[in-house]
Structures are given as structure tokens and as C-alpha cells.
Image (cartoon, rainbow, N blue to C red; front, side, top):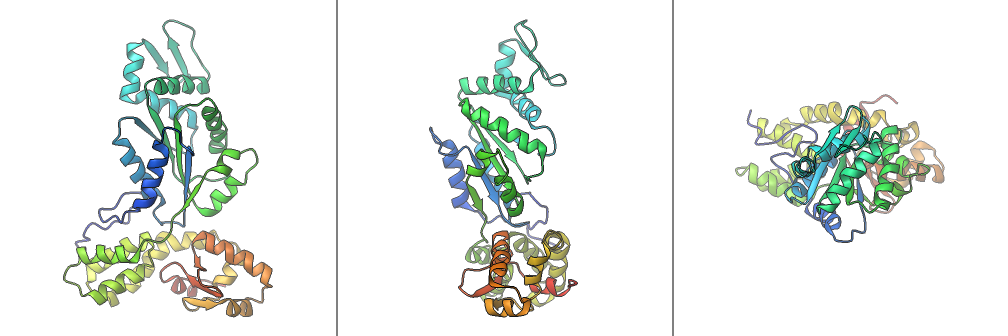
Length: 345
């Protein structure tokens, strides 16, 4: 099967990548200012909406400028040692250390400076490295994929990051996270910096751009079918890849639905469903079709208007429902009503 460059590998920039040019440009421009208004951004969105791909795209573009040192952080390990290693292993920084006869031992977080006593505090070690970077007009971008509120490594690091900013080090942070994790993280006590970090909520991809991409990949397909394929994705990044892959296989839109539902369920929807509270599931169980009115949902769930509003707003923020039209709710994910019909109430 020729999949024409479509991929189901999460986080990898697909060959058929639909650019989020405006968001990408905004992050890079803001971080590159002489006096940046923000030193951090948090990219949020539902699973498989393209958060990690956008983070990867931004970091690759910034890496093309020699002023930037990019360090990808694993949030499930101690973070300061990762920063120290990332800085020291950067060729330009390492060269400066070698010229200055400095040596570093990461096992003991030690640094020896021209025969002086070792510095054993990891934060001090990172600050020494940051100062070298600053003195040589370097900027540091840290990327963290999928942050969560209950991660002690991240929570501890955020406090250290705040202190680095107070000391005017040229350090920046780009993170991704699911809505619910970012919400809890931003409402954690003593994490003011995260609370003030601007969020970029990934919206669905533009259907016209999806149609153009499909037309380019499937040039012998009629316009009506191309538009049906694009509309079927609902702008969902993962669906764009799966639908393209399956249409490459069958070249018949009517033949892809069964496998499409399987892919969506196994790779994404099962995990989304497992994370939902019962109250939100109660609303979703009403969707025996793609669109319902507010009155229909309240009538079926017997919820009072206040409780309904809380659940509705959460589902909209999660990216599961679209509430752009007053009094009407629409499922934001492709064929999610088919998935719901197979769940046990």
C-alpha cells in the first residue's frame, strides 16, 4: 500500500504536514524579541490534535538560528541535570569551557573551575552554564511535552525557572499539555509563573487547506470526493492522517469508515473516554447524532441548567464539543457519535 506520506506516528512531523503558520510565527517572534513580553507558552488541545508536532516544528525552526540552544526535557526525570547536560554538550558552549579549562562531572553535579573547589549544587551549576550562554549572546529554549499537575519534577523545576528569569538569564520554555492537566497546573498554589503563561489552544485545521492537500496527493479524485474527505476530518489532525492513509488504500470513501472508526477508537478515543468524569459522559451519551440542541440535552439528562453549563463548558474546553452556535452543540471529533454508541452507559 502506498500511503503517500501519511503517518500515524505521534509527535513526528508528517510528510503531509498542514502548517499552523500563524501560531508558529507568533511563538518564534515573541521569543526572539530583544525584550520579550513572555518567556513561556503552553500549547493545549485534545489528544492527537498536533500539540507535539507543533512543538517539534517550532524547535526545529528555531534551531536553524545559531543563537538558540534547544534542549528537549523529559518531564519524568529530574530536570536541572538535563538542562546542565544539554548546555554543556552544546558545541559552542563546550568549546568555551574547554578554552577556559573547566571540567564538569554530572554524576556528582560537580564543576571544577581552574583548580578551585568543586561546585556540587546542581542549580548553581546550571546558573554558571546559563551565564556563559548569556555572555556569549546565546538563548536557551526548553521544550517539555505533556506536562501534568501531579509531576513533582515539573513543579520543582517551575520554581527554579522563575528564579532564572529573575536573574535575567535568556531562558525560554515551550510546553504542551492536555486541557485538564494544564488547567490543574495553572491553578496550583505557588506556581504564579505558570498561571501567567499564555496558552495556545489548538483549533481544528482549516478544511480548505486539508482539501487542497488531499487534492494535491490524489490529483485524479473528483472535487466532490475531496471535499467529503476534508469534511470527514472535521479539521482533526490525526483524522487527516488516518483518512488520507485509508483513502490511499481503497480510493473509495465508502470503504474507509469501518477501519477509520477502529483507528480513531484504538489510538485516541478510548483514552479520551477513560479520562472523562461521569457527568461529562452523561451529556455525551445523548449524542445519537452529530448535533443536538441545548433543550434536547437537558431534557434527556434531567440536569439542572447550572450543572449542565459546567459540564458543557468543560467538554468545549477539552475540544470534544463545539459550542459556537447559541443553543446548539456539535461533536467536534469525527464520527465520535459512532464511538459513543458502542460505549456502555
